Image (cartoon, rainbow, N blue to C red; front, top):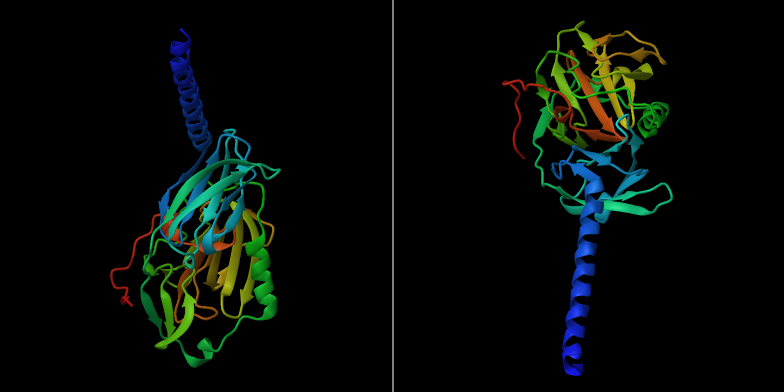
Length: 297
């Protein structure tokens, strides 16, 4: 009996250990399911949707040069949601996203893979007096203040609408040349074709934060759509709103022009997610112009 009891004791201990291990795996899996990221594989310049079933105050993209923390907001459904931008300059690879409570306690984590993304090169021909335009320090501060603000109220819903019916003549992320010379700049938004005077519409509901002419950007309207989503509309000939206005999706906010650093009438518009320029073609249905001349680098 004594010998049999000694044989059974290790088996019992092993069973307890196995149960404890399985329980730990289940708890980790359940914790992971409380918070999700979509899509889990993404290109540079695109946005990840974050969602938690538990009160998560922030989410953090950890490790490497891509470190970034964003807020999550409680929705009417009871879930907590937020937007995590991936910048064009970020490094491809696999990274963890950690979800944190208000006190900094880790609640859950999920994996994100950033794909290598190749952006083409595009040359723009500008008259010397247009190319010579520069942004003033005061203009730069106005833009920085707008991009850095994150408001609590969500005005927008999916999908966004295109501000113009015209096709895309210059896509997001292209490496820009001016008169054949590298500028070191990327195209942080997209250009849509439009005849001068064509109405430009808000892509989503929101609060108007900027209405003014800029040296390089021309006639500009900037809208805060809430909870990290913002848009800007540039080169307009006429501005149709005032700072502080609440606009609805599809409302006319201005008209196509060629003001600022522009070589003809068109609309350049930008989507910002928590201050980072993002590809508008992930957010709205847009068509490319077949005649767009883009060469691979």
